[in-house]
Image (tube, rainbow, N blue to C red; front, top):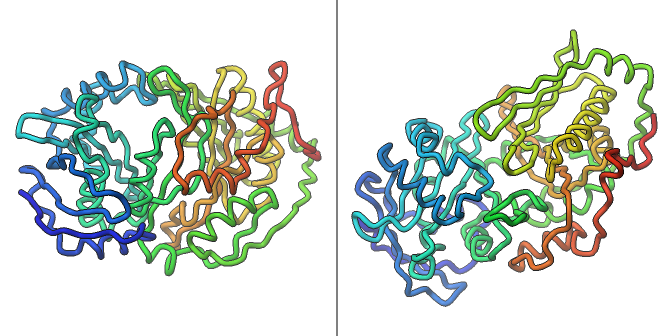
Length: 424
């Protein structure tokens, strides 16, 4: 099936609503048979390349998808489940995942893309956009991605209100295409991934339903420490968030309480599946915790979440994180931290983690039906590639974060973490 409408895109989109308004005449046909879209982008010389059809993957396509990743990345991709047809098969069967195939003929697959639908969080995550090497110069990757967004954003427009992705820095076309379609760069993940045996940084891109920013965003003013201000100013320029309250909280942590908490600390390490380990910290007789996933192949700590009753608990948890960073030779760690808890931000910052993105409306509070702003704090090991490929938008984000001129801070020294004026 083919959609014959032609749309001229005059400027990058800001919200999902803006994007879909331009494509309101496009119908979503039977995805089992495949959909082909026809439209032009006026911000670039329109491509004469092929725009394949997009078709939802079936369980029997799992091996095809796994082979795309194996052939493209030669066995070196940050998430090893992409090489495992059994894992992909399970994802295709899971209603919270979709895989799509791009085809130029009924039996010629040129690429794929996946999405994870986090319904409870009202978020959708785009991942695994891969084109087979021999077709990369023949097909129009930006139109292909835009067509995929038309489908997903129309189908789930009232169920998923925030969409995000992580974009490579080995080339800029992905960054350009995301920005053109309304996924704006919002945070920087230095040295997060390994592609084809090379360490590489990523940008986080995001797009919102207008209701999230206008109606469902937390009404309280964000409370941020001064070190977060650059991140905030960048996001404020994009989304007109208003003025934050900049604070400089004194921690005055209680050393006696810290020592008590250390004695009651419980550590739990569990193998989730091949290549992944769940690491959790608990405190005896408390509901507090700090959890994250260790990606063994990628040497990263990701998907961090925590809950605490007092600041001393967070301090102890982060000490444990640092010890495990040393123990497992971790290259990268990240955690999203509340924009309304400046003392939490201060502990993360004083423990050596840097703010590298202010993400509006990231955390959905189901009980209150609101979205809360959060800040990306991360740590990375090594030196960032000076030959990163950027677009004007991603370069501007780096400049706003002062990343281009800041000297990398020494984080580890003789297997000990260096503190920055942390007062006990």
